[in-house]
Each structure stands twice: as structure tokens, then as C-alpha cells.
Length: 598
Image (cartoon, rainbow, N blue to C red; front, side, top):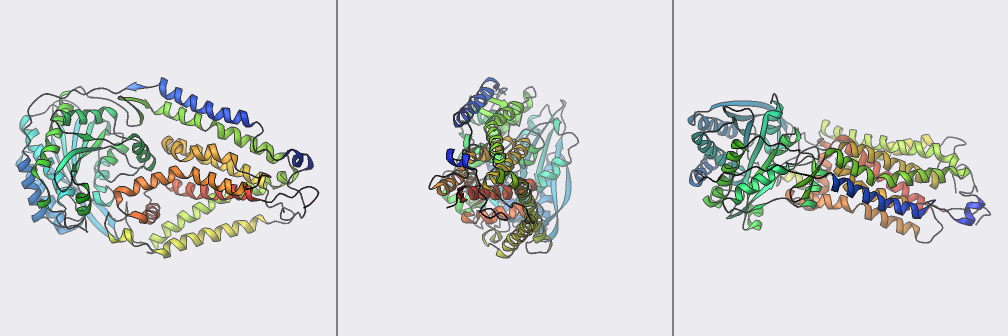
């Protein structure tokens, strides 16, 4: 029964006899879905391009694994507990700068402030630059800071710094055409702040040919080299040409590489989160890639990750050969070849084929055309019934209130940090294995939910004006679908990959939810909403895997929103989507009163 208008029918007698039709032309709507898929496929198929090829020189390598292993031991034992802001980290930076100077390189320190757990600390990058005769710079980067839950932090990442120092020795002895910048970063463990600082200091990022990050030789015997290229805060990824060049460089030495699968790559583009230093480079449209060594015993490596067990004794010199030899070939290949070009915003199609930005956006837009048609139909249905037409203004006000509720939740999250319900972290919550990630704090969670509920109740009371039809399922359905259209447009502009992954199923399924006379409509609608949320669940599972937080991933996501790791609009839109889904379910379970009464 409609509030404020007792016994008012939701539908007129004519609508009752023919039933409520969520789609005026179901066959046409289904054809639109098929047509959208065909058009999107054609866009991607016809616009494909091939990546450039970087030849790998057939030369013997000079990388000395034993030397890199010894440097790892020195960093691990003599500079243990290299946590950002500590005396040990400062001493490690001094040691690294001295090592660069022994190679004849000028080394500088790049200080920067960082807030970690309510403390203002000082981080410092160590940068060494080598000149070249040709324009275009190659950057080699590794982080030297450790974790508070470890001690030696040998595999992650004294090993990467040691490999970088040995590569610097080899490359400077061999000579090179292009300038090479060696960067050892601080505060990688706290949101890649050191890498962000370095990238932000570049006068012209376009002059960087490529950046190669060396992160984490896993404990135990190495078996392969992993390639990671996800960006941070956006949907860019390491370009195809760089990924193929790295694979070829390692294959030349008989070393197997593992790259991310298509499904997982798409999810990483959706999340826009990385734990390694190539991320800030990718965000600046600099071709970048992270290299690391995978262990033959992944359970053993996972057990020691970010713990006191990550010691130099658990590493093997052969693992350094796996990483160092192939990286040397890759650097020399980049230095000797014409400067390769290729986008970081693309969709890989296999066989080194790809589709670039504009065509990706067109294909994504095509997939949402059926939603636009269904939303138009929903407004036609809403305006065809007098009671529904009278409730349109109220339902639009309700839908607008969802954005205010989401904004209130976001402000409550930020306030929780300001009033110290949550400790302040500048860029990212605590590192993996930190107890903070495994102890859910319910006070800030419940406070945030309470504030959103209170704002919702306040907005609901404002809608109850005398003589105003407060709600109607047909008008509510139209408002909910229109909200989905707005969210889809905003997401398409920011991240087409996220729009397709997270919103295509709701765009295709939600229009089939609404008021009908059929039994079990509500139960079917619940199943439709749950099915449309499957891609989101998959993304969360993929994200949780390297974080090793288990069921605590929801607490981690809460922290990501509080520390603005996510785009603030993303947090608001998540709340809006939840409320729109609940409104749609409400329209499907509304009891429609026949014109002649029960």
C-alpha cells in the first residue's frame, strides 16, 4: 500500500489485466544484449595492433651471483631492522651510497616525509646516475626498507638491492649508450612512497625508456622469474613490448618466466593496487615492470614471507643468477635497440596483439547500451501509472540521498583517522603480517555504519511531506536503474576495465528485477543480485591472495577506503550501488494491490 494514499492501486485495471511488463519488447531487449556483445567484439577484433619487438643481444653475461649473495648477507646482518625512519635504515642508505661511489657514480639522497602509525618519519631514497650519449633514460629500482615483522628482510628486499648493485657494477664496466639511473627506494612497504617521490621528481617522465623494479627473491631454491606490471590507482599495465622483451631476455638464458593470466590481469586493472615499485612509474605512463624470483617450494616461501625467518641463509646464490643474468640482458637490449614505444593503457588479445584506449572505451560503452534501453523503458512504465507518476519526484530524491549517504560514510572514515579511532597511515595500511591487519577494530566500523544509518533516516524523514506519495515500485525501479547508469558512466570515464568487470552483469541482469505478479519473484531477484556480485567477489579473492589476510580482507578493504588508497568516488559509488540493489529488491517484493481490493 502506498504511504499517504491508502487503498491507492499501484496499477490501473488495464495494467492489471495484462500484467506488469518490465520490458515493453523483451525480444528486442534480448537482441540488444546479443548485439552489444557482437559490436564490442568487432571493435576489439578490428582495432587490434601488434607490439614492437625488442631484439635480445646474444652476448655472454658478466653478472656475479656470488657477489650479489654476499651483499645480501651484509645488508641483512649489518643493517637488520631497516624499517623506514629507523637508524638502521639511515645507515643502510649510507652504505648503499658508498657502494655507488666505489663504482664511480655520483650518489644523492632524496629525503621525504611519511606518516606511519601516527608518527611522522623521514624516508630517503638513494639515487645514482650514470651519463649516456643518447637521449632517454633507463631506470633500475629496488627498495631497501624492511618490515617491522621481519628482521633481516633478506629476500624482501636486501636481495633486490644487492642484485641492483651488482648489475650497476657490470653495466658501468661494459658501458652503455643511454643514461642509467639506479634508485634504491625507502618506504616501499608503506604504500610505495619512495617510488612515488622519485617519479614525482622527474622533470619529464617521457624521457624514461623503461623502469625495471627488482623485488623479492623468494626463500628457498628459485625456479622461475615472475613478471608483474600492474599500475596503482588506475587501469594501466606494463606495455606488451616490455613484457615480451623481459620474457625473451630470460629465455635466452634458459630461465622460465611467469606472467600474469588474462583473468587475473583484468582484475588487477580493476583494483588499481600493487605492492611493488613499478606501480608509480606505470601511473606516470612510464613503461615499467617488476621482476622477482619464485621459489620451488612456494609454501616454504610463503611461510617465511615478512617474518623473522626471512634470513640470508634461506636464499641460494643460484636464485640470484636467475634474476641477475636475465635482467642484465634486458638492460643491454633496451640500451642497444631503438627506443621502443607502446601504450600502458591497452587490452592484450594474445599473440602480442592488443587494443588501445579509444577502442577499449568504445567496446565498453557498447556493452552498456542495453542498460540505457531498459532504463528508458523503466521510465515509460513508471509514467504510465498515475500512482507511480506521483511518486517519481520522491524516488529521485531517495536516489539522490544514496549519494549523500555514501559521502557521509566516506567522511566518517576520514574522521575516524582524524580522531584516532584508526591510526594514521599516509598512503597505505600496515604491511602484510602486521598484527594491525589481523585485528578488526569494530568501533570505527560501527561508527561509520551508524552515521550512514542516521543520515539515511534523516533523509527519509524529509521525504515524508504531507500529500507526497513517498514510494512506488515502478518509480523506484526506474530511479535505481538510472542510478546504475550514472555509476556506469562515471566508471567508464575513470576505468573502462572496472566498468566492464564490475558493472556489466548488473547492467544486464538488474533490468529483469521489479514488481510482477509471479510467485517467488523476490527470491529470484535476490539470486539475480547475488549473481551480479560474483565478479566483485572474485576481485576480492584475487586481492586477498598475496596479502595473506584471509577473511580479514573486508577489514583491509575498510582500511583502504579510510586511508584513501581507493579513489574516494569509488567508495561512495560502492555504497550507492548497495542501496540501489536493495531498492530494486524492494520493488520486486512489493505487494501490488488489485484495483478492486484484495
